[in-house]
Amino acid sequence: MKFFPSIISANLLNLESVIRTIDPHVDGYHIDIMDDHFVPNLTWGPMFVAALRTVTNRPFQIHLMVDNPATWISRLACAAGDSFVFHVEAVNTSQVSPVLAAAKQAGWRVGLALNPATEIERVGLYLAQLDEVMIMSVNPGFSGQSFIDTSAKAPALRALSSRLGVTAPLIAMDGGVGLQNIGMLALAGIDLVGVASAIFSGLDPVKNIQNLRQAAFFT
Image 1 (tube, helix red, strand yellow):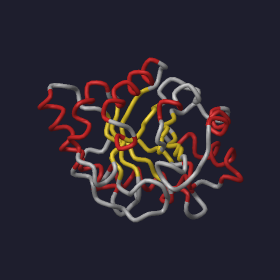
Image 2 (cartoon, helix red, strand yellow):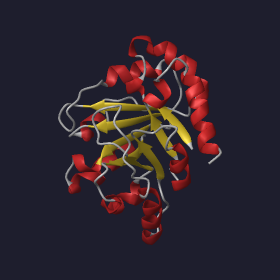
Image 3 (cartoon, one colour):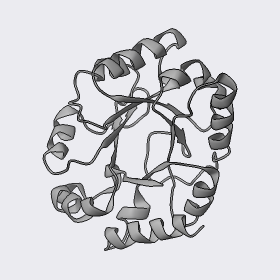
Image 4 (cartoon, one colour):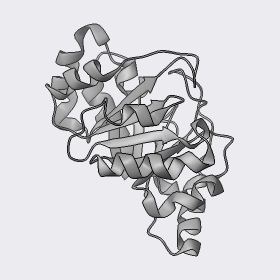
């Protein structure tokens, strides 16, 4: 299982120091971009993402909670291994495939995010294009929410991929992930987790990461 700390819960006033401290212990970073339209919250934009790139070479998982993801493809600088993930609920069905294709052409890994209430079959038409699927375990928009158990979508996604004859994408989960559920998520076959407060709460984020890895590994 890969661990991507969710920057939204980090100490933003001391972010460079935080990243340099945890960077050897993580697999990448989960970066939430919210536009105050698709979700009622507003975070950051291209300059913030570019600034983060100056202090780490780890992959970025850009989680776009926006209502027009196509406009973000060229706004954001893409490095090798970075993921461009937008919500299948945010665009019309006819727009999903073209946005994925455009992001892939620009060099991104591409993915779709699914709200907790959205069925996994919603991504079936696009599985052949996808590098990853992000299963939301909270409703998008705010950090610190209680975990919603959507882990059954992971084996369902692999079964759907098999039925359609395509390679299953990497399966990510975002929202409410912590020590109380990381073992269950590992058993469900989640490949990557975005982790917010479970890493950044307390005084020692490195120890928090180590505890999460141990809990997932020894499940």
